[in-house]
Length: 120
Image (cartoon, rainbow, N blue to C red):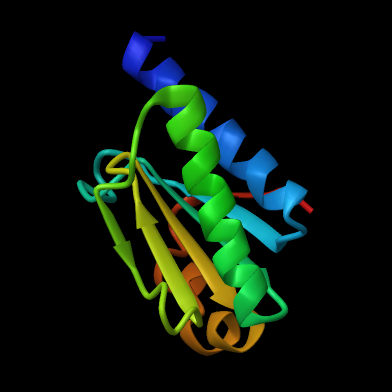
């Protein structure tokens, strides 16, 4: 495994740990093959019961990744409304949904051919 792949796997583990620590629910990762996506290697999808928790998960992930890996997201979207916050770390894109928004958008169905892993 190359150093970059190890870094991505370690970041993925830290993201999952961070979500669990802030009581995020229904955590799923989608691993994309090169043929499936040039967007990123992983999507991480989770949900929270309210907007404050969605923001708390986002804040905590950013702090943990910054402190451990010295990396900041290349893009953050949706923080103010917090029904769906997207954190783009280039190789890993994190989607933090309110429960209602996750059900509505059903991202997993759009990427059904990816390799799924559930963490709850």
